[in-house]
Image (cartoon, rainbow, N blue to C red; front, side):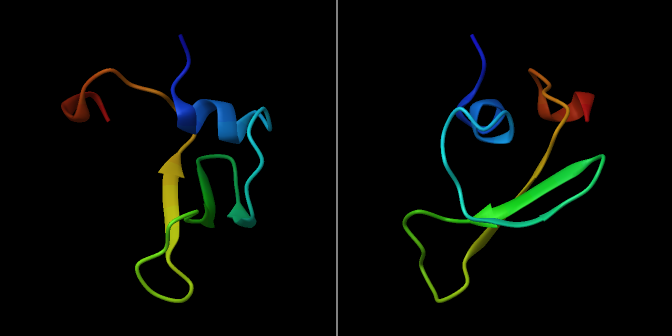
Length: 52
């Protein structure tokens, strides 16, 4: 089952895209702590942090 972030990258869930390249995807948080709160995620999905 794909993660919520994979679904955002694949445009299955809408997001406000800020930037995108071959490795990363940056978009605004839906519950921002501050103005401009942005999430930057890798496009490659891994099961464990140390696999990155």
